[in-house]
Length: 295
Image 1 (cartoon, rainbow, N blue to C red):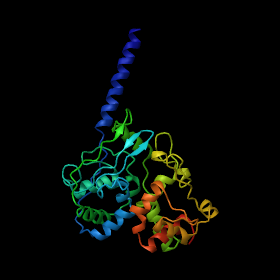
Image 2 (image 1 turned 45 degrees about the vertical axis):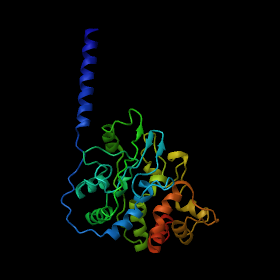
Image 3 (image 1 turned 90 degrees about the vertical axis):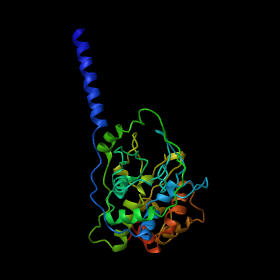
Image 4 (image 1 turned 30 degrees about the vertical axis):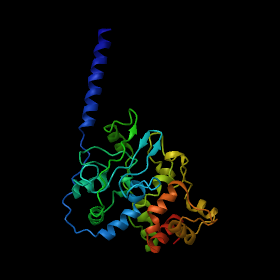
């Protein structure tokens, strides 16, 4: 009996040491000094392509741009996209460009805490320093909104951010955006957008019980999106079977109107309204070219 008690005490000590180690495990990598001049117009375009406005603006509720998005209801709790305006208290007004780079590319806060994976930072990991400088220049033009976004409402144990370090170690993958030799410029540009900035797989890929994307089923559809929404398969064969072409898909990404005359609803409608509607015809055609795998 004494031996079992000692063994249990030893296990408790080891477990406590493990948790403490996780809490203090640094996951923030130094981004280096970014001194490039940013182009706010290019940054604004990249922000649209990346869904920043669509996610961090409560469009249905008439919220100010980037002042905080609509709540995302998930099995793990409700996540609320935060205020990204230049307000120093409730937004990112006191951040540095280094803080911004680490947040966007690594998913780590200025305090060194991991962000919840409801933030689609895994898709932005390949953004260049110039991309970051352009985005930063664009965000500096956003008027401050002195209103906090509501806090996340996430129950234990999912509200323990130190546990996200284990999640990251197990599931975090860099985006696969590098150009492929032998494919057209349009296909490779579409790959860069679809697999990276526009993060199409975030919605159109099923997830495992702990919320990680099933990489072997990329673009196969997801029936369990936040708020009870669903995203269909966008695999090339499934799209062709449903009547999609490069032309009508590019048109739908600009207008929200599908080939049958119906309009995108739910989260996809917001993606178009706040994001893809602002992209160039060339980029929309590139995205459609890549998704349909048609050079």
